[in-house]
Length: 182
Image (cartoon, rainbow, N blue to C red; front, side, top):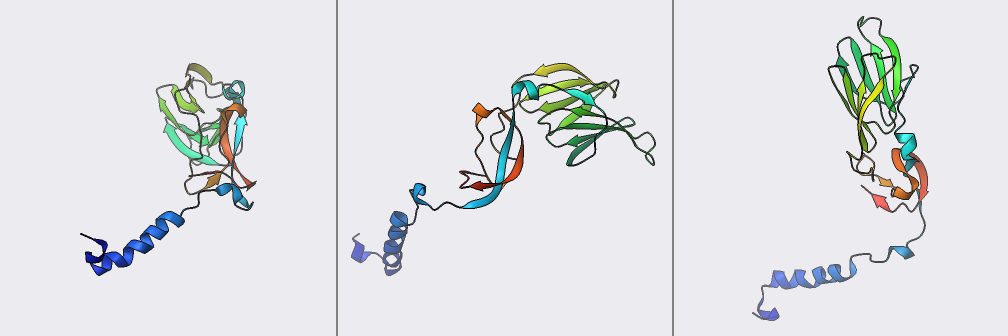
């Protein structure tokens, strides 16, 4: 079959499609003008800072995430920072007990007297038998992949750099030509 013997509708679309295929893609982004946008930037911490888990006095809820109920207690995730422990034995009058600083924390679960939480790239098991003095029982290093991108989708962000440390959270910032997108 020659080009002239092909149906007319095929010939009508062949040339425009070839034109788009050849000239429709931008191949050199280095010549793009600089543009400043609101995007996400990683906040880093050293592994030593990440792995330091402390029981602190109660803290205000600023960016709560998941809530876990166990017995008369509420465990409320403060996204990227740790876990609030609240005595909820009297639901009309909940009492803040403590805040467990667990940098990079997003998720948690409780079984018996042990709270399991992600500690950025590690998994930690915490003894919560005394909610005023939580202790680390066990740490599984590198249980999770390096946090290379934010949880949000449809966002531009500054690409994470392992040489700067471990990403503990993402903050909104004014960036020039962010290279990463999710």
